[in-house]
Image (cartoon, rainbow, N blue to C red; front, top):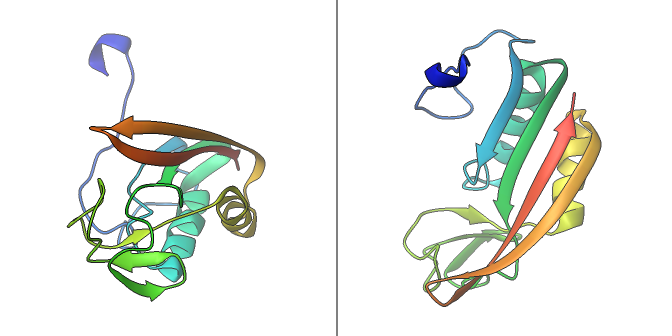
Length: 139
């Protein structure tokens, strides 16, 4: 960051406990973090991200899709949200909510985002199928 004359704010903590002022960030990048929660917490986090962004700010978020190996295994704690996943790359990694394109788009719209663009990526990781959605959205 320093070599590029950029500034960044880093923190470790619960995404719902972030104590920052609104209209603070130019952009927010979520790289498969928010997905690891119950759906109501996910919705609250995206709304918080929206509030943290300056007008015209951009969100980039990455989440897992239902074609990811392990979807449907373990204990379903709510629709499309599982814990104790028994196989695949998310095995033993806690809570995982799996999205489809429409569900991530709807949550972003409900949070206030506009100009939403969603790309889908399918790949294998050590032979395990992974589906991810990469969404861009503006405040």
